[in-house]
Length: 252
Image (cartoon, rainbow, N blue to C red; front, top):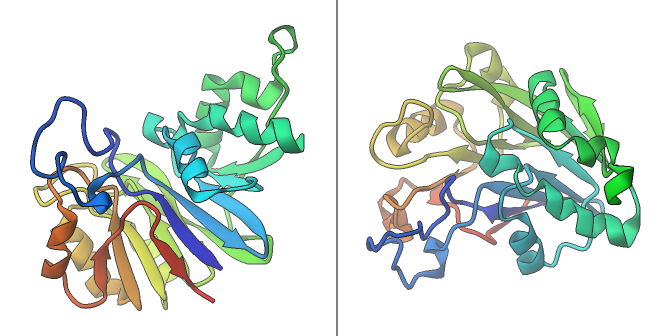
């Protein structure tokens, strides 16, 4: 199984429009961050977590030939507004793409993008996605997928465990009941928005506390703002790194 960080940035992307700070003007390509998403390659299949606003750009950059399934963490715009970019894959393969999420997320996305799920014959849209509400672990192309309930401020979101790797984005707290779902991880990819506190996200310090609690083999911080320069990687403890767009984690 291979994990690819499609987007390591926050909702604004980096560089942020109108900003001339050191990170937004950095020459380090790892400081160029698209909106947050993840690709899982498993047994020749391609699973994306969230259809981020920059999905088309990410898919072209990584040469993704098809998308076989989508997992949604929640319905915020930076995580779903690239959903139209799935149409390009449909034009080639003419296959419905199964998608998964909690009941609220699936309902919210279906309401905002009804033509994606039901089509719109008059305007030439075919249905593209087959929605599935998930409440428990399931198998997907030979991978054990475990939904992990999280809190994004007061709002529930869903993280995912894939065998011995976990992706926890847009979260500020992990409920006590979710910690057992995260035991024995080889890889943890987790929200660490910035250095200063934020009510709806882990910051670097609080993400480090989670890493100390879970003790994964490796940890990568994602959903980064322009407060965080990739050169600061050297300030993190051993086994912890800042993620960057295009980063590959190979679990084989």
